[in-house]
Image 1 (cartoon, rainbow, N blue to C red):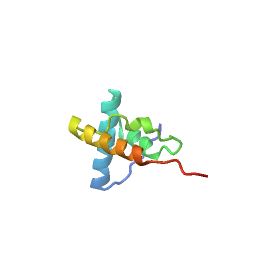
Image 2 (cartoon, helix red, strand yellow):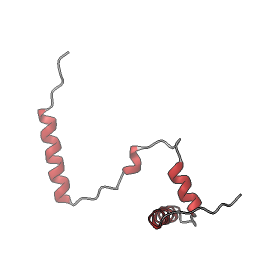
Image 3 (tube, rainbow, N blue to C red):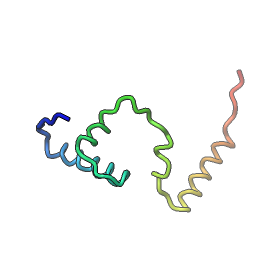
Image 4 (tube, rainbow, N blue to C red):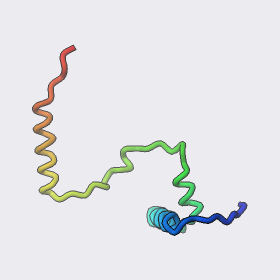
Length: 82
């Protein structure tokens, strides 16, 4: 592997550091800035809605209120006539 030195702002350095830390926490293995940059530049990686599963935290009361709103909307919804 060839190595290059690049200049990055303090802000971007911190962002890369956070991404590398997240990758390390997720995999349990050491992650480098190269790994972080690869994650950021993967164009062919398709987004999967299941990647979001479990990210939205809410209390039981918030869940009940949310479901009440959804059920109310479902009752009002009608299939448009063609």
